[in-house]
Image 1 (cartoon, rainbow, N blue to C red):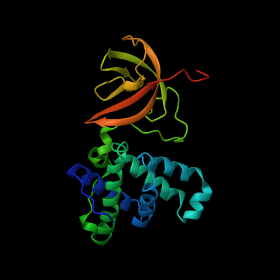
Image 2 (cartoon, rainbow, N blue to C red):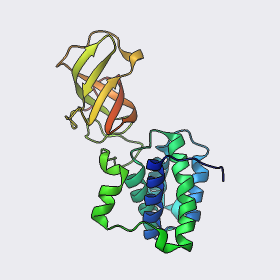
Image 3 (spheres, rainbow, N blue to C red):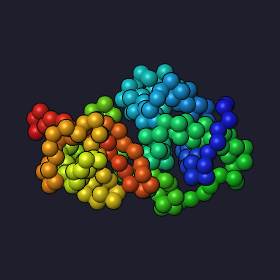
Image 4 (cartoon, rainbow, N blue to C red):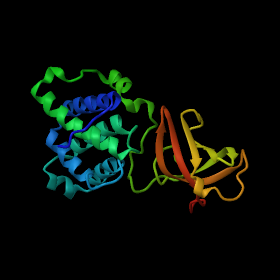
Length: 225
């Protein structure tokens, strides 16, 4: 495995992820298979999407020799600990690589694994500061939902419009200190008046400290709404 250098925050995520997976009785070889798949991807979110697709296809589950429960457990744990970094493919790959190493280590030296109850898990996990992920099909984002996912179309309120950019408030996440939409610079065409609403599509999601940034482009009202 390629030598990976993690900062202390990402190493903590890998440690908690490894311990949580071991607690769910997931073998490190199962995670190695997912890492192999991710090497051919370019988006960290592909890990979560792939797990959703597997769970939606019983034949794939049967061929894998694993059970739906195992994939559900992997999905749950990965969403818990990785959601904050899914927009950064390289970080996801580094964390997964170290997670597999630590899973092997915790198997051999079980007392070295972090121990925490459910309440401590939610507090310790880096995902505790991130918005919830969609738990439905990754291929069909809900129109106007409160779930933050690339591809989602929603009607947001313009809260600032300057030459430097346009800022949008998400309808379901009104605290702009936590979630803030920004129109991609190349998509700023025409007039954007403060307090007006616009239909926009999320193109990607990034983190700035504890704030979730939704990069957007204008879109049309979805059919049926």
